[in-house]
Length: 211
Image (cartoon, rainbow, N blue to C red; front, side, top):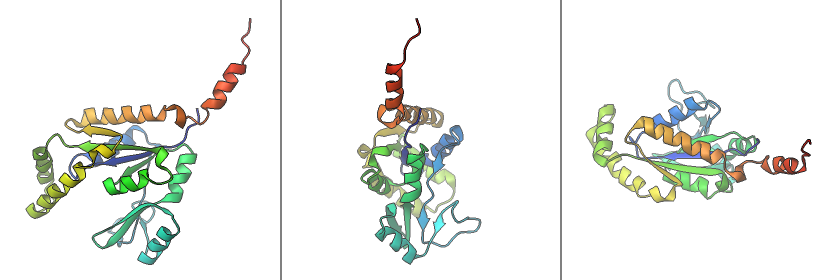
């Protein structure tokens, strides 16, 4: 049955397990496309244009924004980041699902865009702030003051949980993965997303049953 593609927004405070859940979801369904963002920052060693990011100049980025070619965009630490609109629209019409790893601001911009009806938004919560801090520390990547900053930012991000369609409390990564699969399966089956359903039913009603 033909259907329109989904825009799957996955958001969470840093350390809640969003990246792991996104990776598991894409391993479960390799047809899922991860949205590639445009950025004005310089490529890091090993990064490939069009695979990790689309690397563009600040002037090129502004031109894309002015031409309404961005679904969402923001400035982060002096660099611009954004989601290009054309490949997302193409995926929707082709029935392919796109996964977005964005914060609540990016998610809000996508939901309020002209493509909002295709959005499924999911917020991932930690089981507790104590556990969230433990996870950040166990990474061994950040200094104590950076972790403190992330924890402060987490409170602001968590305050937007009610703006999302679904909320997963990630206490057990395996259960959270199964919950995520269930959400995606159900959303794909929504009547309004199955673009070929009307014709199928018309054919069904016109079918003559052999006697």
